[in-house]
Each structure stands twice: as C-alpha cells, then as structure tokens.
Length: 299
Image 1 (cartoon, rainbow, N blue to C red):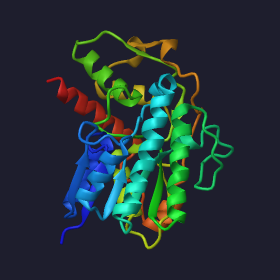
Image 2: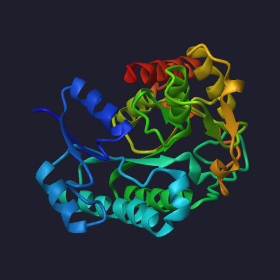
Image 3: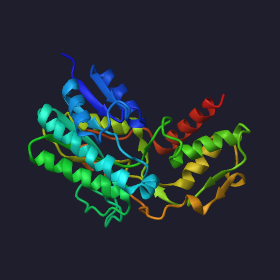
C-alpha cells in the first residue's frame, strides 16, 4: 500500500518541490490550497485530515512574507499560529500515528545571541512573523511531548526558479533579465548589504522528508551555514545577463524593513549528523539558474 502524505501550502515553492519528491518515492500525495481548505477553520481541517488519512503531514501553509507581517500582524497570527494548532489537534484526534513536520523559520532566533545559530540557541524574534512562528513552534513541541511524532524544521532562506517575485532574490533575478531584454530600465532595491543564509529549496524539502524518516522526532536546522549579501545576488544576476549592475540598480529606502534581523546563519551540523543531509547546490549556481530561468520566461 502506498504511503500517504498531506501537504498544506502545496502550491507554494516548497509545496511544489515536496510534492515532486514524494511522488518520485511512490507516495500518494494530498495537497491543500487555501481555497480548498482554510487552515484557520478547525472543522475544515478536521474533515480534510479524516478524509486523507495520511501517514505523514507537512505543514507548510503560512503567511510567509516577513514584510507583509509587519502590516498584517493579526492575520499573520491567525494563519501561522491558529492554523498550526488546528492541524495539530486534528492530527492527534484523527491520525495519531501520523508523522508531522512543521515549517518553522530562522526568524524565531531574530536578534540571535550567537552565530551560527543551533537548535539550542535562545529564541528572540524581532518581527510579527518571527513571533508567530515561535508560538507555532512551541505548540508543535508541546504536541511532541504529548506523544505525537512532531518535528520542527527551522528553515533559513531558500530559493529556486519557482520563488515568488516579491522575494528579493527573485526580484533581482527577474529585474536583471527584464533590463537585459529591454523591458525595464532600472531595478530599485533597499539595503543590499543585508546578509542571509541562502539554500536551494529542493534541498530543503529533501530535509523535510528525511526528518520524518528517523526513529524519534526532533528539531532540525536546515541551512547552508554561509552568509551572503544581497549585493552578491545583484552582482551574480547582472553578470549572468552580461550587464554592469552599477548602471541599473538604484538604492531606494522605501524597500528597507524596520524590524529585520541583521544576519542569521544556521548551523546544519545536527541535520548532517542525524539525517545525513547536506546542501549540494551552491549559492552562485543557484542565482545563475534563477536568472537564466527568468530570461527564458521572457522569451
């Protein structure tokens, strides 16, 4: 009998690649879009879990853009916290033997006291998104203590050609492609000195799956362990399309965030040791791939 998996947020970047991965491994995959099942509606969630009867649940659905969370704090809490609680309760009641993965975030560490961050680093979120992910993370831990096979995956920034255009990496890659194609004249960005720990989304979803194949549930950081500046994304993207970035990139303070961690870098050594997980696709290769994909999309 095929193993069954349920994915919330299946149409997003991570959900797309996770579905591909699981189907390649012979899973029967059930996916939720927001118009099919609202995670903030406990009865809709209960019915969906009951009907799917999954062996594994991957909870990816969230209000996931940090900038948006600053303007919609209440909605962020409702989706990210109550949605997670609803799914946990339904899992415990309908399929208590199922294994549960929650896509937490590096933003729970926020103003981190150490770099790189480990699973034991104290939580210090600095924005509504980070606060909501922390509350949900703690509820997942409580469910684990109550007997559910529940895993928190602390996901650092991860990208791919399927990344939404409102994320800065994709904004840069598509912007460079559009300028090279003569469809745009400039690219306006905020502070390009900001640094992030970027990985390939396809590697991250592989880590999700591995975390549910272990003997006991735990928490894991999925990160590259390297910090790169937004400026590096700019330079690689424009180099890929054969242009001098300095002639087209304009600094615009309106794109700066008011509450954002300065630099978060994750230590993936636990995932490496326990799950045999390690990113393979490098940062430069990823940005080049995204830029070329953006160019093809314009043809």
